[in-house]
Structures are given as C-alpha cells and as structure tokens.
Length: 332
Ligand code: AQP
Image (cartoon, rainbow, N blue to C red):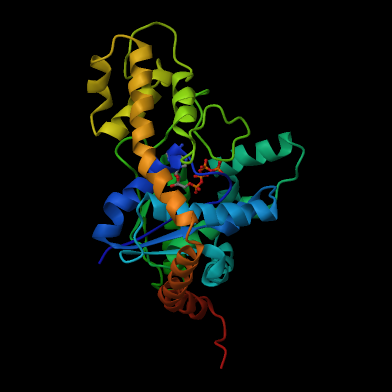
C-alpha cells in the first residue's frame, strides 16, 4: 500500500495557504487512499527565534486544527514529532551524508536567514540543517509520497537525493519519495503582497487569512487584497499577480478552472466579493469543529498518544536498519 507522510510546523497560526496547499488534500484524498502519516513538526519550529510557551500552544492548536479539518484517527496516524525519537536519531545519520553546500542552496534557508539577520537575530545552525531533519521525518516512514505546497518541493528533492546517496553507499535502506503538489493553490500568495507566499510566521498579517479568523475578518482581508493596474480580470501570474491569486483561491474553493472563472468577471470588486464568500464558507466548518474539539482536550491528547505509539512502531525498523547499514555497533 502506498505510504504518505507530511507535516505542519507550529511557527504561527495555520493559514489558508497551509489548508489549500497541503491539509485539504490530506483530508479529502490521502487518508482514504493510502497509509497516511501526519505530524506536527514541532522541532522545526525551534529553528528560528521562538517563545517556548507559544510553540507548545501552537503545536496543540495545529493538531486540533488538523483534526477539525477532517483528519480521522481511524484512517491515518497523527502525532507530534518530538514525541517520536526516531526523527532525531535518523537526522544525525543523514547529516553525515549531506554537505553544507547543499544546505546553503535551499531557498527557505536563504530567505529565512536574511529575515533572522534583518530582525537582529543570529542564524541558528538548526535553520541550516532543518531540511535534513525533514528528510529524516519522511525517510523514517518509508513514505512513497509527500503531499506538500510548492515551497516545500525543493526540500523533498533534497530528501530524494539523500535517500539515493545513502542507499548507494550503505545498501538499500530507504524508499525514495516524491512530492505531490495540489493541482491549484500550490502556492497561495499574500493578499497584500501577491508576489510573496502567504506564510504563517510573517510579521505583517493583513494579507494572511488564518483558519481561525472570524468571517468578518476574512471578508475584510479579501476585500482589501491588493489588485493590479488595469481593470480587466485575467488569469496571468506575471502581469496580474493579485487577480491571479484571487482567481486561484476562488478556483480552489469552487472546483472550477481559474481561467474559466476569469471570463465571468468584469470587475475586481465582484471577484473579491465572491472569493471572500467562498473562503468564509470553506473555513466555516473547520472553525466550528475546532471550537468543539477545544472543549474536549482529553480526546486530542488521546489521539496524539496513540499516534505517537503507532509512529514509533512504523519508524523504528527503518531507523534501526540505517544504524546498522552506516556502520554503528548494535547495542546488546
Ligand atoms: N502559501 C502557501 N501556499 C500553498 N501551500 C503552502 N504551505 C505553506 N504555505 C503555503 C504548505 O503547507 C504545509 C505546511 O507548511 P509548513 O508548516 O511546513 O511551513 P512552510 O512550508 O514553511 O509554510 P509557512 O506556513 O509559510 O510557515 P513559515 O512562515 O513558518 O515558513 C507545507 O506542505 C507547505 O508547502
């Protein structure tokens, strides 16, 4: 059976980008058609300046939102990364096969290290090595597919390289996974800056729709979205990035083609209104279910406990095999 792994890092409140780029396909497709493993990758949230209490709070919120969006513990495994030691055990072995040059080429590293320096912080070594930990997350489970948004595709490519290299040097150990991107909304852009990705940890929040935003807040953010010069509604990312982003959002919500939708609008205002309504309706059940789950913390704890137990069982054989293959003396 196909095995799928993916995760979300608790660096901020989950966004519409996280939902459309990743979470929705996990819920609607992946957990039904494969052995699916989903993770709140909390160790990744320590790679940038962080407040410990906030990371803890956001980890629980992310897990609760993943359930609220429709992940079903009867169909998939849901857990928190730091509850399963196999991830860090394997990460070190993979670091011993990766080069610093490979890490420095990662686009997220380049962008985030600039941001850390600009805000007066130092760049943590873990920010450089984070893609290796991500590779360990994936390879530990023998995942065939990794459903992600476009911004993570480069990290999955690196994971493939590390898997192939390890297998060639030390013998067949890892499944070589592939990234699976959603057909639309693989990169939801910031509503105030449609040339940059909607990211949950960005300081400027007026262009970011959070899954837990109240309907009137969602409406306001979409209605105030930056659009482009000219009045024509056209699906053209280079010439009309703002309008194209709205069309992709509406397409993702309605299941229609963004190009076809464009033909039905003669003004930006009407497009914004329909997009706002569609996003509000898309998120309404998630918000409502999240509120119900918050009233039952013992349920969420139980899901995460069972999920971690199952994840350990799944990961341990592969990680133990990697330890043997790379030359470490087994403990007796
Ligand atoms: N804007 C986006 N459009 C489409 N997909 C997106 N994803 C993130 N932003 C968008 C996808 O969501 C999944 C979980 O992302 P992550 O938690 O691993 O972090 P990230 O990729 O670094 O995304 P963020 O939300 O922008 O976090 P920060 O601001 O901390 O960097 C992934 O599959 C991702 O592709």
